[in-house]
Image 1 (tube, rainbow, N blue to C red):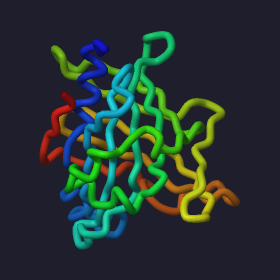
Image 2 (image 1 turned 90 degrees about the horizontal axis):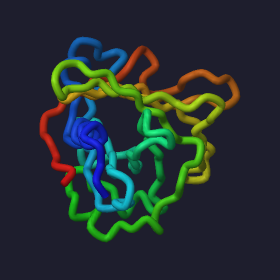
Image 3 (image 1 turned 135 degrees about the vertical axis):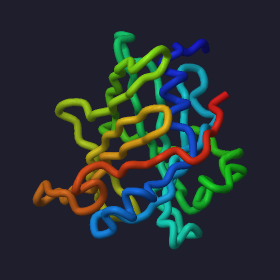
Image 4 (image 1 turned 90 degrees about the vertical axis):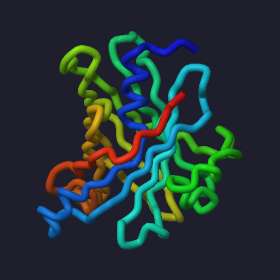
Length: 200
């Protein structure tokens, strides 16, 4: 399928290896030093650009976590983009795939669980020429919740991205209190791109 230049730009901005070293040094009480991988994968190619995301604490790079799939596609009225999240049915089988993408070669869509409420709307702002800032926010009246290892998980999702930076607003939410328990509690995790991955 022919994708719009803006959707391709969004895919390229998200694809890569990132870390938040500067933020972690400046505010170590609030921000752990993380490595984030967002790898393009060959799924849903008929209408989407799809990424596998995984992160790890830099002191435990051999213990990555939060495996997820991000499916980027044109919105229904062509005025915005959507990001639909999926969960691998067997996260352990893909553990480490951020740094070892060969583990993703046999992944199929049948091995993923759709997370219906975990969907973002992406708007774009033109900065200069063909450079953009993309902002992804949750749809109104939706709740991102799912079961993981027998536990009920509630998450608030969101991000902003430019060509060189990725800001994650993802937070875990206590379903009883509605308060954030992990993630971007004091503001976004501010990642800098260290390595670009090709989406083609």
